[in-house]
Image 1 (cartoon, helix red, strand yellow):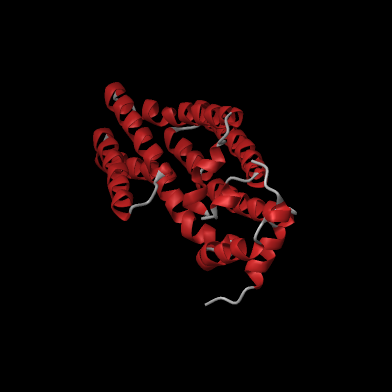
Image 2 (cartoon, rainbow, N blue to C red):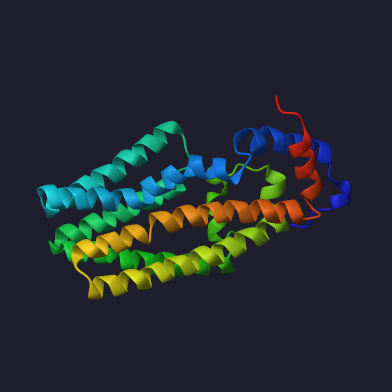
Length: 236
């Protein structure tokens, strides 16, 4: 989408920005504090609950508790009216893990699915670069509310493509790290590696994604003046 920057009403755009972006999430830190816990809950929660249930009560209980956790989170987000893209994806993955785990009766097989899931995710993320809406743009509304004019701009599309590249490489790299750990370490050590390659990197990537997006928009001649006006506007 090409936008004639000479015809933009910066007053309108700046007002929209100040009413949405600035009042809700004016900084990378605030966005991470708001979205980070949800990201960790949806991405890492099922694995943590499975491990605790497995060690305390047995394999079947661990799988069942992880599945119940995923379903509970999904229902909670639906009641809140959230878009829940991450939640829906996590629920599908929980169902796949539970089916394979119960069918195989093996904790190793259950945990090994993380490698396959990461590989598929990495391929899907990178493949989305060939579409009009790359992976990163799927979550924009959940993480950082923006006016429609910005969401449809070429400037934001370029930032989303860069972020999508980075996330795709991360998922494939995480799959390789976890495969190495599964082949060389004990099951308990593998879970530790899975945790360390998950939570810290997810938070770091979330923070970088928001920071990168904000930097691209602020440096662009298309949106820089409007954002500067919005940030300079007095807040209610």
